[in-house]
Picture 1: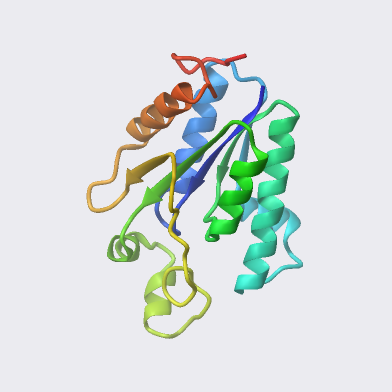
Picture 2 (picture 1 turned 180 degrees about the vertical axis):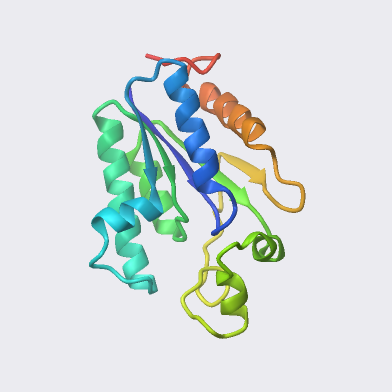
Length: 183
């Protein structure tokens, strides 16, 4: 039976890194139908027709959610790393994905600015660029995530974050107690 591990947070919170590590752990524990969906990669592959304004981001988010749900319906255990800035998408996921784990990587803006290798946050804060979520575009912070990992000043090591996610996934029946594939 499939499901979705939905990893969300602002840019720089560690979504892609942690999602890839969760996916690799799943594969190492026998999840032959594990799948990894990265929001940035998904947009590059399917969303060239949508912008980075709120309307375009919502359309892209709907596509990602629908794709993940379809893969879960086919029996895949999907690990998705996406900003997911809309409450309505996370509510949709809960209604349409029977086995769903929402993980929120919470980090304050000042920490994200320090980690920002591309300088995107600094440029947005200085008014040189627009359309940056958390600066001039709103972010609907997850209201009821299944798991919150604080990625602030002392973020969890990737392996520790994966362990915590896998424990919660086991508690929800997405994986067996040791992380192996569950029925």
